[in-house]
Each structure stands twice: as structure tokens, then as C-alpha cells.
Length: 154
Ligand SMILES: CC(C)(COP(=O)(O)OP(=O)(O)OC[C@H]1O[C@@H](n2cnc3c(N)ncnc32)[C@H](O)[C@@H]1OP(=O)(O)O)[C@@H](O)C(=O)NCCC(=O)NCCS
Image 1 (cartoon, rainbow, N blue to C red):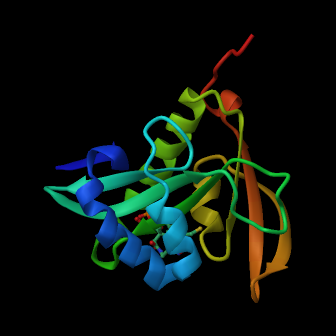
Image 2 (image 1 turned 90 degrees about the vertical axis):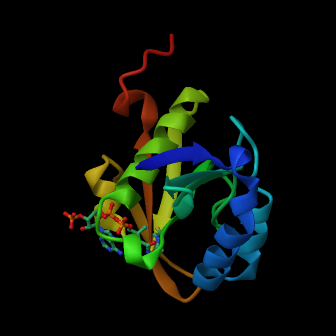
């Protein structure tokens, strides 16, 4: 059975998760991962767990693009272990992080992607702009969580 839980309940999984992220995105991001262990507060990590094994993550972080300090917070660290890809786990993790952000009272959430724009479009994210970032073409996207989850914040 697959569940998604906050990292604060599974700190024993943090070293394995940090290693996936270092291999995918490098050691600066690994440091972000090691410091994203809050419960109900950003920065944090949501972990997909199959049996007792971590198989993927999604994160909420305050800063992601050094070129856009004015944008915050961000969905990031969306990662699924290779052998578990293509089964909807990336979508589930992203949706879970979005719901948790909404529950924290966040309306505007941001992300950038160099490869997975389609995945986020499926969840209602909108294209904002494209820019050259760290030697790649990055698509910046945004979602209004209050609209997405029909929350009235009067
Ligand atoms: C991107 C990633 C998280 C997707 O995880 P996943 O569990 O395989 O994704 P899902 O099965 O939920 O995919 C849902 C949809 O998103 C799309 N999608 C998934 N990965 C994609 C990718 N790399 N590029 C473009 N579209 C992608 C698929 O079209 C899929 O729709 P379909 O079922 O109609 O084909 C995974 O491939 C991964 O960890 N990649 C390496 C890290 C990475 O690039 N993360 C994204 C950072 S923005």
C-alpha cells in the first residue's frame, strides 16, 4: 500500500532521500533537503512510502530560483525512484504538497521545471514564463491554490 506522509515522522529515511536528490540535482539542493524537516511549516518534505520503503518526494521550500527572490513559496524536489515511475506517484505527491500548502493558508505557489511541464499542467498549473537558468531552459509555473481547492478566505 502506498501512503504519503510528512518527513518529520520518518527522519530515518532522510539520508536515502538526500542521496537521491544529490544525485539528481547536486549538493546545494541536498543541503536544502537535509534542512527541510519541519512539520506543518515550510521548508518540508512529503514522502511516498510503499510498504516501509520511501519511493518518492515532493517538497515545499521558501526559495528555489536565485533569479526570483520575490517569488515564494515553491513546490520543488518532486522525485520518484526510477523503478516506480509512470504509475501516477509524481502526480499524487505534487497534489499532496499543494493541498498541504493550501492548508497552511498559502494562495500562490510557484515552481520551475526543465522537463515535466505536462505533469504540472495536468494539476492545473499555469505557464508564467520561460528563462535560461543554470544552463537549461526553465519553465516557471504558478497556481492559485485557493481557486484550485475552492477555498473562501474572507
Ligand atoms: C518527473 C517525475 C517526478 C515524474 O514521476 P512519475 O511518478 O513517473 O509521474 P506520473 O506517473 O505521476 O506522471 C504523470 C504524468 O506526468 C507526465 N510526466 C511524467 N514525467 C514526465 C517528464 N519527465 N516529462 C514530461 N512529462 C512527464 C506524464 O505524461 C504522465 O502523464 P500520462 O500518464 O498521461 O503519460 C519523475 O520522472 C522523476 O523523478 N524524474 C526525475 C526528477 C525530476 O525531473 N523531477 C521533476 C522536477 S520539476
